[in-house]
Image (cartoon, rainbow, N blue to C red):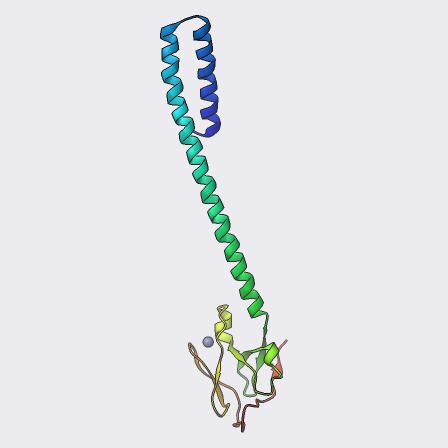
Length: 157
Ligand SMILES: [Zn+2]
């Protein structure tokens, strides 16, 4: 029974109780008392179920809010990278802020990005390839670079 039906039932019983009182009908009044206590019990049960449902919705809303916050954080992080083609033609992501860093750029795996995961690629000492912990080696330069510096990256539109 929903809360509205439970309230309506108690009201009806209350009307019956008033009629029984006016008529000084003790038997009828006792019957109404029993009916009313049962209906009050149903009302409490319905109110309790309603409170529980409200709490469940509030909890669900909190979970969704947290999920939105996490997704925004993820989108912000993904937005800090741009897709580029390496000198040997492989596709990687480069952290925009590190693109012109004289110590070398920070790269992320394109296959991981497809799964919305950011995996920083580890450069090999000679910069011939980058390594993703999940996807292995990704070709980078045809010729080794003497130190930190990297080849020219072609921007992909
Ligand atoms: Zn990867």
